[in-house]
Length: 210
Ligand SMILES: [Ca+2]
Ligand SMILES: [Ca+2]
Image (cartoon, rainbow, N blue to C red; front, side):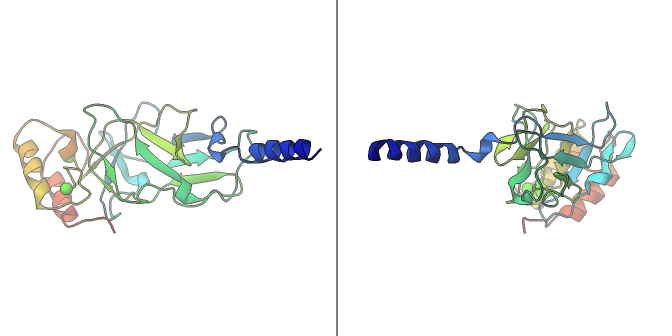
């Protein structure tokens, strides 16, 4: 009898102990505000003084790249007040797509989810390096499976991706300025590297993670 009770307790414990990361896999959705076919580029600095998502750029000019995430559990019920610290952005890992780096907590959501289970990325990231790969929305350590990644590229005055924008980044920029076009140095993104990009580089020098 006691053995049977113990078995029931163990089974109940196992049910209760189902890891929470099994949630959020099937009903969460994420999107950017950018129109289909547009590839937004977001300018970042490690100190968080880069561009807001509404001020991302494409070759056509400013484009709103604000990310909206709807967090729903596996019964598709909105999850309210889910912690911003448990929702962050990462970059898809792919050869030749850059050296994006984020400060600790530098890509978390703007706020906890609201009563509808919704949060956004509007405020500037605290990040450096550049990336042309897709942007992944990660919840509690797992990238969304309902979305192959968002079309959103990044660059920064921290060209070498060591989370500091300083004089060590200048030779890389200079090489691109006088050489062939390179996306990483098109800091004021418009498809050319010129004086406007130098201005952004100069403004960014000195930025470190806070
Ligand atoms: Ca650097
Ligand atoms: Ca430019």
